[in-house]
Length: 223
Image 1: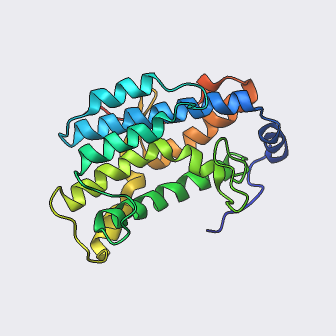
Image 2: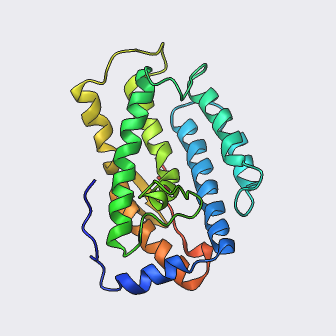
Image 3: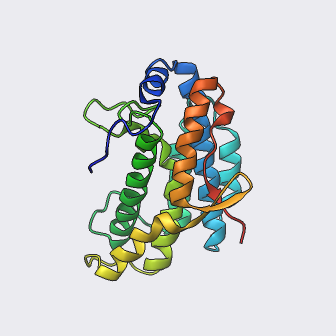
């Protein structure tokens, strides 16, 4: 991935604010990210006619600052079992995982670009903090975007037996369109690409104000 640096006119100021951000604010923002992800997972199940959405909503309400009870992982076990019974995320040969990973990569790249355009340093994450990952912050912010890719992958693969075939060109094209999916940001309906830009801008406002509630993330638009 190649990203232009110093695109934002307040690059230095924003980077200093980001680097100085304390753990309490990071934990509150991570709480909001995890809640948004779980609520989007619930919306994804509803959109696909699967059961289990209410349990995910209940889990979202129980996410604490920094997610100390690891509700994200608990919700994941519940979510994948309802989306595709007997599905395993670690099975790289399953076409469903190929579709998911392709969609996630496209969404992550869109988020990373938006973060850099907003003057943020993508290596400085909130909860992701790998010394070898140049995009820790993108891996934080992309979490609520993942269920959109899940819906697209499910509609592409269906609910039948898993395929072991490689992705076709059409399937890659389909998943590459994830950033054109419709989402809601506040009262507005926008594409996920625009949602990534607005999320990055909201993250900057949250850091500068010290208020996690300023962080706005995408949700599924009502049909």
